[in-house]
Length: 377
Length: 151
Image (cartoon, rainbow over all chains, first blue to last red; front, side, top):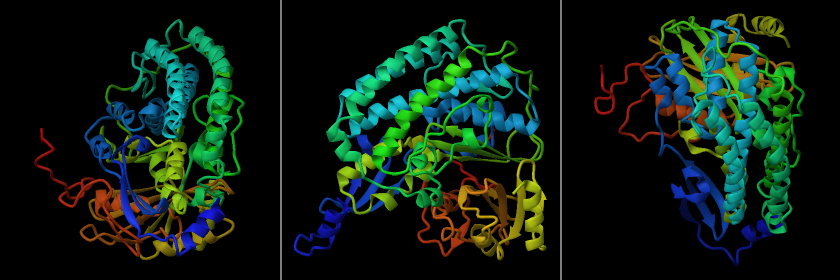
């Protein structure tokens, strides 16, 4: 494929003038308000320049006027599909700065929620990227199964999308009495449903032709561009924060960091499918062993962080999410920076989409799993 | 390397720089003119090999601006925080590190947009989030009469 494209680019007889096409800001395959200024020659992409800022909400500026418990509630508006991981990152950062040890029960609950959230996020990614590639049926399958997880969330914390479940010192409420039963029922059900996903898309020859060997990102480039999460791991970059800097209950459990080698769109796809299996394994290890105890420790009414800088990294569904807090000892932070995985991931798109066709650009975008509020913040 | 070894190694290599153990990670603070050379060394030295720029953030202090680089080595798995201070606050300039870590190109555009720190030798510095009618909102002296209501 690459040789044919190379030949097409270099052959003078079919040469047309370069022209610019705006993909977005309102386009289904950009998953939100993202504009890709694409320089094309015929169907071949010569340059992609992402333009962001359409939904910039200034969250980092807002945090400077808010207290720490309030900041937690803002973070799930960024990457709304990894809401709980974002909440947890700020909570862990505050707890580490104050050297508060949360009860074991909290660690287990948070980790189970992390993995449920990852499953829900990957389900939505799966169905939406199927739709990007023209397979509409996938959308209904994915949303159907995601509904079960959202119901579990709703039962325990009252929210389906922006959970706000973690608070500094623990979680907001104890888990619902039906929580363990429902999670186990969901896992049993989803273990039967997940092979359907593979039958529907992964094994589909049309789908494979559109993704195999398309948009290759090498391991060196993944590291240099800071591409993390399933996207980076598909290129062989071992970047799982859960493995390398374990937090919450991750030190207690056995799990495998799924890795790929090819770095093409199909590997990124396959890796997220494997991660869903792994997430279910993690939940099964924890769900029956949630220790008894408090669901939160008592924190001071006004939380003040000691003077200094604190950095906390967690593995969100899209990659490494980081919170950098500079505190001057007051109840508001002096400066907060969110290192969002989508921001670093998005800007490799020019590097890997060059020379591919415009339909391949959509396949690359689909397997990058971008959430635009995460990038714009 | 452990944190202690990393601090010892950096102290011997850079006696002028301020190396200390921060609340979590080793930290090294350098001035604007030595920052680029230090970071070339951090990436190329085989015993350090900081090849992954995790996060780059700008902070506005009363006397100067600071750019904070969180670095990790994917081979040695050690972590370092580099802080580069600008000469002054009115006209903050630093050398870009986009030639060392390509991801810095985009983080620096964000810092330029929100804090107004200029990066020399940057391949394409432009505003990402806001248009030119805005100032630089993350500066402490930023005033916005239209969108911000003072209590």
